[in-house]
Amino acid sequence: QVQVVESGGGSVQPGGSLRLSCAASGTGFNTITMRWYRQAPGKQREFIAQINNSGWTTYAESVKGRFTISKDNAEKTMYLQMNSLKPEDTAVYYCNVLTTTLEDLWGQGTQVTVSS
Image (cartoon, rainbow, N blue to C red; front, side, top):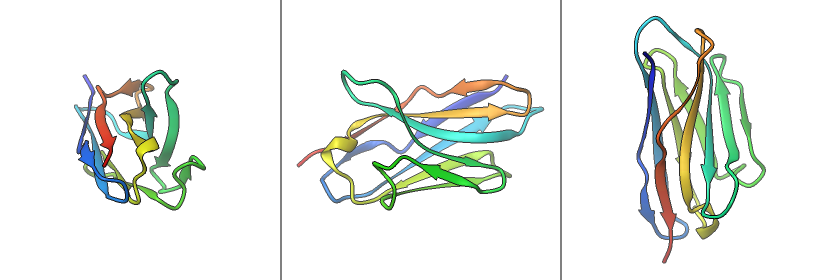
């Protein structure tokens, strides 16, 4: 059974940085695409960024130039480096993983709070 776990959330002041991690664990699978989403209170979950095994990346306009997604294929781990954070980046950040066994999995989420 594949499990997906996010880590690295926390509280930071505007202009600060955080690095989120997403680890997919289990046996008999590999990852195809890994994505980050976020959901702020009272809002719908929104797409942030994605990366595939070739390293091809896509970003939402709201984070382009500030966030960087990366991936360690061997470790089945994805990262999100978040710089120049703004209060509007406050949300629960979720990892989504599409596996070679055609499972579409979500983590439990990690809270990011940007406040002075």
